[in-house]
Image 1 (tube, protein in one colour):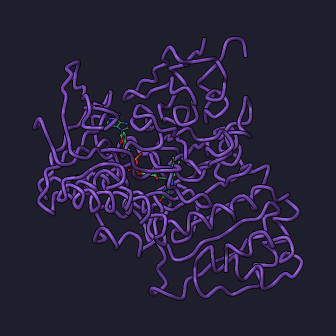
Image 2 (cartoon, rainbow over the protein chains, first blue to last red):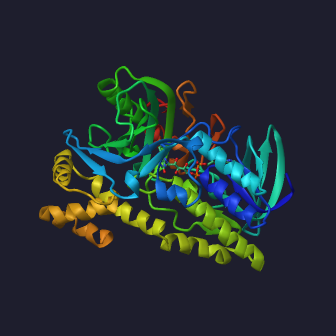
Image 3 (tube, each protein chain N blue to C red):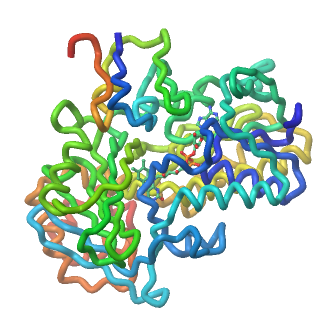
Length: 398
Length: 57
Ligand SMILES: Cc1cc2nc3c(=O)[nH]c(=O)nc-3n(C[C@H](O)[C@H](O)[C@H](O)COP(=O)(O)OP(=O)(O)OC[C@H]3O[C@@H](n4cnc5c(N)ncnc54)[C@H](O)[C@@H]3O)c2cc1C
C-alpha cells in the first residue's frame, strides 16, 4: 500500500469496486479498503438485477449468474397473483446473481485495471485538514496507517460510518429502514424463472416478501419490513419463519442472511471537500424495490469520473465535486428514485383490502413492458377511482 | 445499557444505519457499542432478529 493515492475508496462492494475500476482504467492510482476478510461475503442481498442494468457495467458471465428471470409474480394479501411477463429482451428480464462471485469479479476487474486492494483493513477515522477530507486512518490486524488521498470515496454500504465521521448526517429514519432476513432455501418447488413478491400487512408490513430463484429447486426467500413495524415477536425473521412453515415446510435452509435496506430519500448532499459518497452509503437505493446494486455501480462510476476531472484541474473542493451530486440526481437513476419514493409512500399506507383490489384490477392487464412505471401507469388507466387516490402521485408517474 | 446478544446477532449493520448518535459500529463480525449510546432503543426495534436489548425492555 502506498502513502498517497489519487482515490482512496472505503468499501469493496459494487460501488467501491466500480469506482476503483473506472479510476484505475483512467490511469489514476486507486486503493480499495475493505474491512471484511473476504470480498462479497457474507452476502446481504437478494441478488436480483435487470439485464440491461447489469450489462451497463459488466459483461454478464455465467460464473456470477445463478439464474435468469423471465417473469415476476406479485401476490396480493388474498393470494391473487398477477404475473408480469416480458415480451422484450427475448423473454429475459433479469438475473439473480451470485454476489459472492460477482463482488469478487468486480474487485478483480479493478485490481486488473491497476487498483490496489486491502482486505481485513478498516477505515477507522478520516484525516481532516481545515475541514477538508484528505485521507483515512486504516487499521489492519492491530496496526494503524495513515493514507492520504486527493479524493476519498465513501462506498461503505448501509452500515456506513465514514461520512458521519466527516460531519454528514447519514441516519436512516426508523420507519425507512427495511429490516430484512433471508434464507437460501433448497429442495423446494418453485418456478425457476419467476421472481415472486408477496404483499400484505400480515405478510410483510410496509415491505414485501420475496422468492428469488437461484436454480431449479433453490431460491433466496427473504423479507423486508419497516423498522417501525418491527419488534419483539414480529420481527423480519418471525414473518419469514411463518412464511417458510406455511409455504416451504420441507425446504432446507443452507444460508442465513440478515440485513438492512434504506428506503429513505438519498442524502441531502453527497459530496463535501475531498469526499464523495456513493451507493448505499449515499442512501441511493430504489425506495420502492429496495434494489441498490445498479445504483451503487452507477454512483461509483460517476464518482470516479468526477474525481478524475477534479484531480486533473487540481481542485477537489466541495464545489469542484458537486457535479457528481448534480449529475446523479438528474440522471435516470436519480429520477427513478424520486418517482419511486412517492409510489412507495403511497403503497405503504394501503390497507390489505385496497391492495387486493389493485392487484385484482391489474391481473386483467397485459403488460408489454416489465417496469414499475408501466404498472403504475396501467393501474391509473384501468381504475378511475384509483386515479383520484393517485392524484398526489400523478405528477410523478407521467 | 445496550446489550448485544452475540449468539443472535447476524452482524448485518441494520442497527448501525438507524443510530442517530453514531454509537454503533460493525467491526467485521463484531458489533461495538460506543459511549455515545443513549439507550434510545431505535436499534433494538430495527434489528431483524432481536439481538439488541435496552435496559429492561
Ligand atoms: C436483504 C437484502 C436484499 C437485497 N436485495 C437486493 C436485490 O435483490 N437487488 C439489488 O439490486 N439490491 C438488493 N439489496 C441492496 C444491495 O445489496 C445494496 O444496495 C448493494 O450491496 C450496495 O452496494 P454498495 O457497494 O453501496 O455497498 P455494500 O455492498 O454494502 O458494500 C460496502 C462494503 O463496505 C465495507 N465497509 C463498511 N465500512 C467500512 C470501513 N469503515 N472500512 C472498510 N470497509 C468498510 C463493508 O464491509 C462492505 O463490504 C438488498 C439488500 C439487502 C440487505
